[in-house]
Amino acid sequence: MTIEMPVQSENHVRKSLSTAAAHQLAHTTKSEPQMQGITSRWLTRNLPWVQVEGGIYRVNRRLTHTVGNGEVEFAVDGGQARVIPLELQELPQLRDFDDEDVLQVLAQRFEQYDLDPGTVVAEFGNPMDRVLLIVHGKLSKLGTGEYGETTKLGMLSGGDYFGDDMLTDPAAIWPVTVKTATRTTVLALSRSRLDQTVAEIPALEAQLARVAAAPKRPQNNHGEANILISSGHHGEPMLEGTFVDFDASPREYELSLAQSVLRVHTRVADLFNEPMNQIEQQLRLTIAALYERREYDLVNNPDFGLLNNCDLKQRIYSESGPPTPDDMDDLLTMRRGTKLFLAHPMAIAALFRECTKRGIYPDPIEVDGHRVPSWRGVPIFPCSKIPISETQTTSILAMRTGEKDQGVVGLHQTGIPDEYEPSLNVRFKGIDDQSIISYLVSCYYSAAVLVPDALGILDNVVVARSAD
Image (cartoon, rainbow, N blue to C red; front, side, top):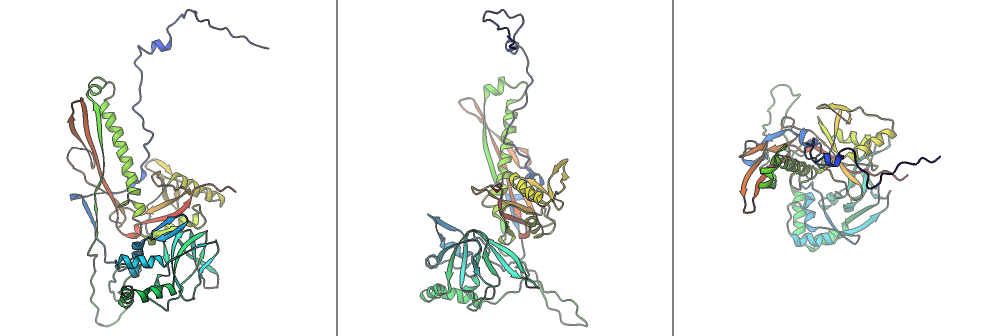
């Protein structure tokens, strides 16, 4: 059955006022201007902020003997990789060797190898016959347990190096077995090529001989100069004197800043301020954008950002791709008193997919009235500022926070001129000839890692779903 609806003709006479016309006389209810780019900014909210007088914060530490623990960088062109010559200074034996011409020659002696998964690159107990620089991929360091079982002792990944003891010790042997876990590209310097280079370049020979002859300075497991302590003795033995040696060149963090110039036409400020103040709303959203940039810099800034200031020994790699409960346990056990994890929302989802596969359902915990996911009772805060690479990999950060706990701290300075919010000021710049009011909005901040084990990173975390 068809139901015919009456059709209103064009010349139909309306019997009441239309809503479109009524809208002209109505005083509408309006929201404040909304901004999609505002996030929860959990990192900013959870960092203890330290007042920095004078704009500079110096991190004093005990003297550390260990050097050359950086990450080696490469130039890749058309599938061919080469080590950047000055990056060879990241090897401890070449740390203070600054002859760029010699380093250029040495860099050219490295050969590239593309290896399939499961390739044994080095075998425990065999003579160390090459220096390995990992360009791309993952390698497992394997050992043997008490009962002959194979144990995993760690991972190597892009930027790592291995076998550098060969440079100064002709009798060095491989301390572990190294096997590729994924397709891997390495640059290798063989012993024969090293010997040839040393024979040709007396300056390099002298450098390696000097490092080999240098006395081993007593240090603890963290590379810090030892403090001599006697215990368990009887009677009145002569006690050795000691002192705590400090780093003579401590790192200093200068406050960084984010700025913007806010412009508002005087006509807008004069005539359209009811029911909402136009300048206040403009300022509110500008400040929100500055705070988003502050959190981005706290994570990514090349100078003080957390991703770029994690000690290499505090970086580990996901063994299977996605973050697993085992990976999270490894990351957690690398430091005492971990206060929080920080991860991209997609990394959190990937972790809990792995938990679900194993029948593990971690309980969320309450933080400031919010229910947030956790692992072993440590909250996992989402942070969209952590980048995801084109290959769908990212990082998960774990940190201890606060000055008293020798953790990670945020740096700012309150009480600055024209302060609008802590460490943020708004300065009136004047009105130009086009009737434009200008305000300079500035936010000052930085971050510091007080000791290396305050911050750890689980790298190469795959967040993409498996196609299987």
